[in-house]
Length: 163
Image (cartoon, rainbow, N blue to C red; front, side, top):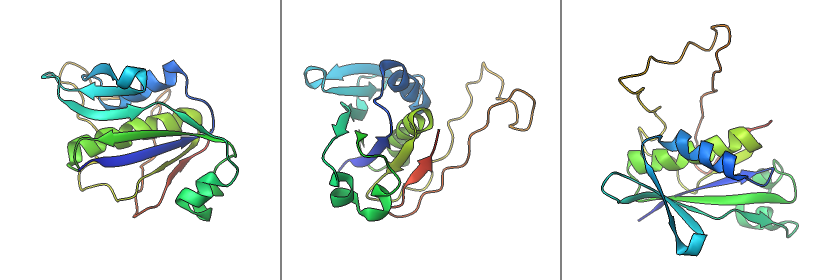
């Protein structure tokens, strides 16, 4: 069974935003194309796909987000918006965390919200450990540091970030 996360973003995602969000998901995974370019996969060192990212779809039909996800979520988005679906290989915290970090990275860059039909499994939203050869990032209150807000997750509730 897959664990699905949807990034609903305000702007069309460009290659840079997609690549940066993939790095947010996990910087050590390999990027592999699939489905004649309609899907990008993040794979581990053995080639096993951990996250499949479908091509962005512009939601052009007025009211379509409301029909699919309800009026509360639709009210938070512009019409039209862009729908990017990320499917994790299983509902374990590792792959589910990849999906949330990818979608959250896109939303952080392009505005919008992250939606999932199920709550994140315990541990899925924990930050990645810092690589052993790199110092940890400075504290957010340190001059010049960039912090990120915690990402609350509730059953079928969106994460919202505005630009």
